[in-house]
Length: 205
Length: 219
Image (cartoon, rainbow over all chains, first blue to last red; front, side, top):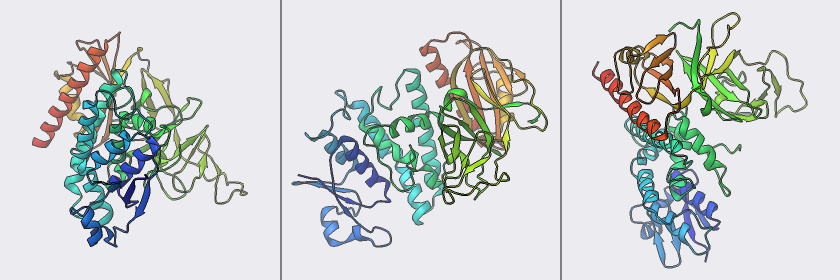
């Protein structure tokens, strides 16, 4: 059965799901919603699926998933997924998935503030820049260890979950100049078979 | 910092063939890009068409194309192709300012001053550690380096280069002033450091950044 994704094209969280699905080769039944300015995600039907009033929502048979790590994990572990995004020892991948959803949540907040006028962008921008710095520091050490990806020498779910916050950082006023290790890493992520972009991420490679 | 010198603006390894990045020296915005043949270029970071940063653009062979409308420039900065007007012979007046560039000691150097550039800095073979960006004036970091820092020291200064003793070997550090409250250190190591030593140095570099930025915040 094809999983159904309730999706908003301009949302970075929804992009994470489309990106992972594309890389593991799982087609999605995408239901496009007009979140801004339409508020389609706040209808009674959508709130019945996710009372938090938030996208993405993935429905796969009886399963209704609203937390991004659960959605990504589910897609990558489906029997028909191209294997490899969840390593045999997944703790480090989970560690960086946690970083993507926790430390880098500020990137989503900052971008929504900058682009949709939702709140003050200054504090989340500062927090997002600090988190990207920590990720850059990590990738410098990964490079010394001979690893090209965040959780080791191979692409994992964590890289795809982390990629949007960096790739879209110019949307909230954080340039790529000072993140040399992240520029090199992002280039490797872009080269992965099945990689797709979203509005705001140029498609030129 | 005087601009009558070769100035470092990136580590060589950070600019892979076929890529571009932005860098700023005392407010001057510079696109640094490497063509697919491996030649490095330092240009004014501004497309003559609509002012878009060329560092956001994409490299095709020995041309760089602007992200906005795809105007393509050759290695001399001359516009060669305008996608919206494919049959137009592009006027010679459409060109980007370029600066002399050199690579030495694992760093990219630019010559922003007027007149012919002298020979590039003569530096030893090094291993790149990292570029470290700090939210403080370069003068603050230089003062710290001249005493002693978590990274090593005290430093001997020669223009925009600091030489520091460290327990992993002598460090050669390129000093970049970005603006009144931002700077970058391009840190390289001489000799044959082990990966454990390099990893240890990355932690010390972060400690230096924390220390310098905390001083700046308290000032």
